[in-house]
Length: 266
Image 1 (cartoon, one colour):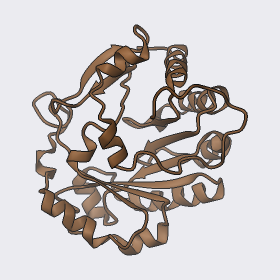
Image 2 (cartoon, helix red, strand yellow):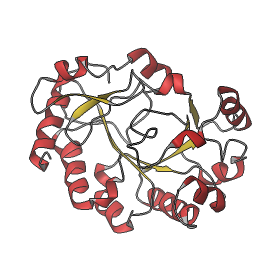
Image 3 (cartoon, helix red, strand yellow):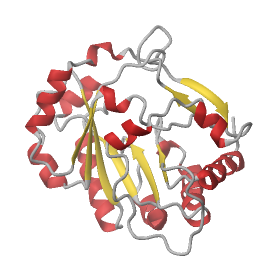
């Protein structure tokens, strides 16, 4: 496995190639708070990235972590697929206190001037739910609504921890959910078509994951090859990236005094 210094070296290469935004996701990033904190500081203070964000399920977040790292964190996104705890349990999202923790984290973000974002995977168990009242109360600056996506050997097949086929919905059902929440100005829908190839994802070995064949195929590691070589193997669709509003107001404030190149628009 790469060391912390390996990760920093790879991130520096990405910055030099034009990276402007970095998002830590998982798994669950907050299971490794010490390493996460060091990488947040490196990304914001050393690399001077415009935006540094985290996606979390919220269960392991501590207030003292956010207070300590608030200056190095622009956006905190919490995954919440339902405001009905029975539905969350069916989906596998916690054991009955997920919404309570979500509200607490949202309050901390407000207190520490961290942009609060919400991520929802629309699936078989929640596509008929009306979340308008809760979203209006939480007031996320951005609400990403994903159509549940099936990828071979990721969430489908014999070697996966859980087969997600039971969660699949039709395009029509996904659109029904989106239409029900059109009044929420923060909503950003992502259908399977927009989502699949529009993300640049690094795995734990610092390889891009190519999803063009409906499974995650790793590129060569950034520790071994130049960024462009690995990027050519990533299957990244820039048109889809812009189509899902991949560029938005992602900084808390303008970055001052930070140099860097802009070879790549990502």
